[in-house]
Structures are given as C-alpha cells and as structure tokens.
Image (tube, rainbow, N blue to C red; front, top):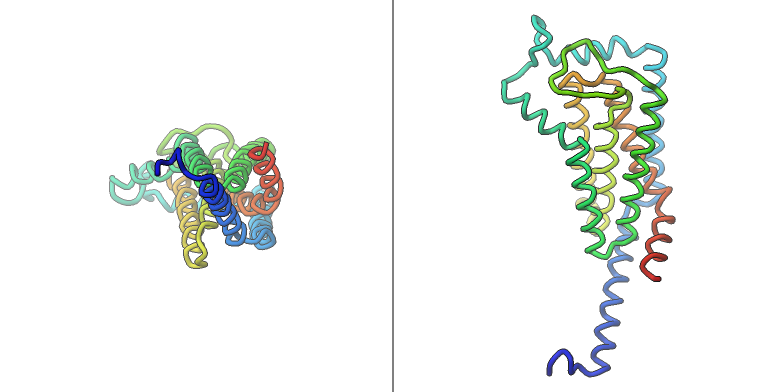
Length: 254
C-alpha cells in the first residue's frame, strides 16, 4: 500500500504519535532543565561577585591586583614579550576569537536553528532572548563604568572601546553557558548535564584569561565580565523561562 493510499485510521494514528512524540520532547526538556529557582540562585551569586568587583574598581582598590595580573604573563626584562613558546601567541588569539563577535554569533545562530529543528521551541526562544538581552546589558555596563583600556603592557592584538567589563568574557559566558543549559536539557542523566554545563564554564573562563594574557583587559575586567555574563545566563534562564514558553506556544499555534 502506498503512502497516498494509507487508511484514514493509520493517518490519524501517525498524527497522534507525532504529536505525542513532540509532547515527550517538550516534557523531557522541561523536567531536565535546571530548575528556575536553582538557576536564579546561581545567577544571584554571580551578580554578587560582580558587585564586589565593581566596588574594587570604582574605589581604586583593585589597582595592585590588576597591575600584577597583567605583568605576570610578560617577560620581566621586556613587557612586550609574552612568556611561553612562540606558538602560544597564535593559540591564545584563536582561543579569544571564540568570544569575538563573529564566531560567537555564528554559534548562537546555529544553536537556535538546531533547537528549532529538534522542536525545542521554548528552548530556542529562551536562548535567543537571553543572548539578545545580554548584549544590551553588557553595552549598558560598559557605558556606565567607562573604563579605558590598560596601558601597563603592550597589546598583542587590536582592541577598542571601553574596558570594563570585558565584552569577550561577558558575551561568551552568556552565549555558551545559555547554550549549554539549553542542550543539557535533552539528557536525563545528571552527569551528562553537569559535563555539558561544566565544559561551557571552563571554556568561557579560558576566553576570559586570554584577554588578560593579550594585555587588552585588566584582570578585574574579565572577572567582572565573566561573572556578569554567567550571572545573566543563569538568571535569564529563570526570569525569561515563562515568557519564552508563552511566546513559543503563541507563535507556533497561530
């Protein structure tokens, strides 16, 4: 029997199974995503740390730490020479590119497409809303503080704009941690979810360190940037969860 000649009862059963399968995916995603209360708690802890760093920067109490944090990566005899083998410079530049605008946004768009393909509509809207609102938060923080770039050591790559908080650190934490939270919800195994989220955290921390190594940010810039980005990724996971669900259902049910 051809597909076009499929009996009506078979077509109805297939449609019911497809709808049931979609409900299973959505239900699993809901049950296996980090609880909003837990995400909010982690977010608040990160924002508390961010506030402490802001206090140190505004009051000038982090100057010695920033100076030492920039100099430690350079040769004592010549601050223009980074410590380590020659290939390390290019490796660090490649690493820092993961937090740059181009690659970061490519991964973000690819993640949204993948989530929609998997029929995780709520996750796709939640991730997109977290990332887009994170840009606004990071821009507002940079304007509010208005800290210039460090000149303690020569920069090993070009960088413009205000220094605090580090945009690479903030936005990479937002994108990759929010992405990890979305895709981790696919697994029923706690260890798998922890591994995915932990890998995102470690990767974004490396991006943050690379900015100091290259001399384009103070250590307090990247610490605040990472804390703020991670704080936004987790807190937005709680704050935007229900709005994303409403938007996703309303958009696709029209």
